[in-house]
Image (cartoon, rainbow, N blue to C red):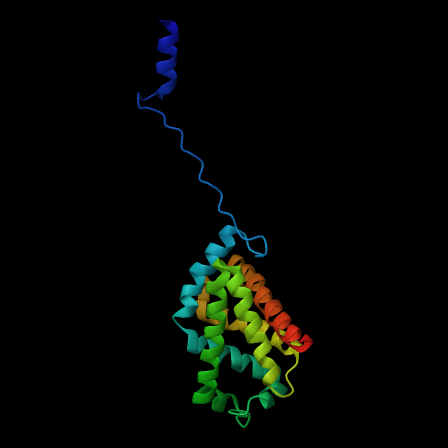
Length: 189
């Protein structure tokens, strides 16, 4: 009888309520090719929603910062290479259209983090498509990294914490590496 009471007592907490052990949630498996943890990926997807609501303005901001730092790249763009001033660039419909296209590409890439086979296929194709741009070099992809991070920071404002910054740095590096591989592999064929 003592044993039965001991068993009953151990099932109840001091308030007389039953103790239930919480099952540990299963660990979410992340594709090992992805340089983010499951939590980082979740945070990336969550914060990207703020960017996706402001794609054009974020993209224009990114290109303004790109041309501010690398004005020589403006010559690669037939539609808006004549836009020398920041004001002309900021109000250009052609630049806004291209910025939206680039941001849509990044959007597809980030949404593709759930399916890395599709992610790699898509971004490799985008990288390869830059072969058609006269004078374009693989290292030009890297020049968008800093302007992208600055534009994201501008758009997210106080939501751009050091943790979010780190996640975006890892993500944009992963995206650019994939674009470069697509560009370089297109040369090999």
